Amino acid sequence: MEISVCIGSSCHLKGSYDIINLLKEQIAKHHLEDKVVLSASFCLGCCSADGVSMKVGDQVLTGVTAANFQGIFDKHVLEALN
Image (tube, rainbow, N blue to C red):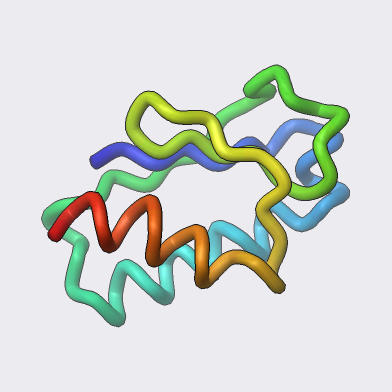
């Protein structure tokens, strides 16, 4: 599974590096290093969304924040891999 987190100007200001760190923590916690490729990406075209944009597989998710991250990770990463 490929996950890209936008680090463009808008997402950077909304906390994209915090989301990347949360992803790294969860990937390690669930031992998914061999199943998930995490990368940074420039603009995913959703700059007006509240929160960070990230792409999981072919799906672009918007509005990702530290507050809603865990639910998004559980649904879009853990469920998809199990």
